[in-house]
Amino acid sequence: SDNEESLSNNNVLSIFRDSQNNFWFGTDDGLNLYNRREDQFVRFMVDSTEQSFTNTLSNGTISVVLEDESGMYWIGTSGGGINIFSPSMNRFQQVKNDPSRPSSLSSNTVWAFQQDYDGTLWVANDAGVDMRRLDSSYFIHYDPHSDDLRNENDAVYTILRASSGMLWIGTERGLSNF
Image (tube, rainbow, N blue to C red; front, side, top):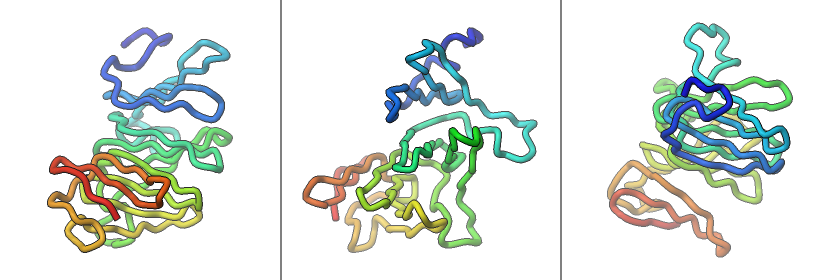
């Protein structure tokens, strides 16, 4: 939409309410923060002219948003990996798959996040499930075809930690847990 007072795109893919009761809307063309106190939208868009990549999203298709315990925002995209947004610095850190680094994010198409009470972040993506401690910079990849995650498809679309401690994952072929 050309109206700066509204969403950047009408195709809304994700909605997240943060600890300040603001709403984050992920769309097919950008991330939109709705500040309830000021009754206005702030848009975060892809800027292809940005050279440092700290002022722009890596990809405009926003599939999921999560606020971690330190107040950082994890923004999953469809093709651009993860963008970690620091509100205090107003900067993005882009986290992407690097085929030369096995400990990097395993896919740049991210569908869902699950944060555990102990600071572990689980990432559902097109290559399975990745796990990362928030105080770490590396991912551990869980292969959906291994004994740990028993499903018949690599892509994991949703993920939830049950109160029992079991991790449930949803794929196009059903549910798995471990």
